[in-house]
Image (tube, each protein chain N blue to C red):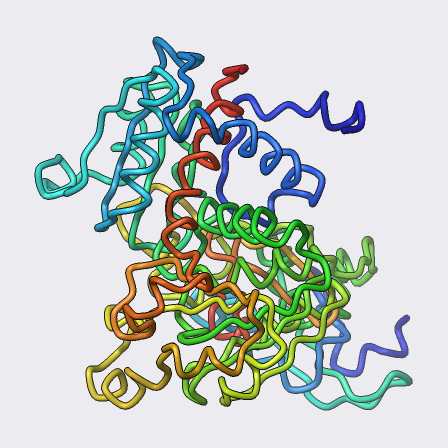
Length: 316
Length: 152
């Protein structure tokens, strides 16, 4: 590790968008996450965030992101306050997000939040002195998911550069795939986008990849795309993002990953999914060595432990 | 310079020259004309110049504020602003978009936090290209394609 990396200081920094970080900074976060692994598994314990309080504000439902953030804080000796359902808060009385954030800022040392409006975390960061960690803002960004996805690929494949990575499913509305495409292009991965024609990757995401020197292929044929792939990243077709049910019904179930499909894939292909899955991956795949999606979900812990310790100044 | 002034001279006021041909009406909209004043306004459209066709707007007895100038830069990046006092051009400058524009344009994303009514924030965009103008929302990162229709 170079001396430049050792001097990197994240204390007080907001984690809003993966685009706010250079590749060197991302590598540094992933290195810290690797060091957190024994602590994430509970094999070791060090209360480096003792006395620190995390405000966990989930204005939208979440299982993995909220639980893993809260678990990460607890595993490092910190405490968590917050809510997972805004109906019990003053927001119900019409309080603005800005004022809610001011309150959370007064009561905590860091704020993690998920909200339905794009840009909500950026707004929160403007009103909070404490660092804000974006746990998803509408159809916008989800940087900690992106980091744990990169961490998973790097851990499973040892490198990201030149890996043949297929992104599958709802590439139009899916928030994880937009920032992930950008980040994978930053690392020089070889990208293929597979989706129904109505859910194609937006042009601006493809343009961003091209600006980073990666020209993604696009197809609607998963069978073709999977043949020489190293990573298959599947996403759920999200009913809640569709303007009407009829459009959703037309595309749901377009793709299914099962053992028959995987027969034509490389033996070391890994299948990833940000979860929750519905019908995209048949449960029979869970038992195969291809399935890394549960490991991927676990990786949320070391990555979020790394981020919390970095922004709160905790040192291992 | 005077050769370019195709419509009658004005004693005091502002001449907005080199407006992208066809955009004079949008400039009037930005200036709130006719609602905002009773000044005499002259408009020339599709005037031939050495750089091709352009529009010109002359507003008597009024000098523009920087916000108005920035809005004009969004739709006519090559426009020039001439301040006239006693028939003389006392100041002439090209419009120039700043690197960031605040409170001038609404975001095209209906669910962007900058469009939520009770939040105490103004819209904020990074200017990613000045000519032609391209802007990206600071909050949701969306790039509106219909900038002219979104000017506040």
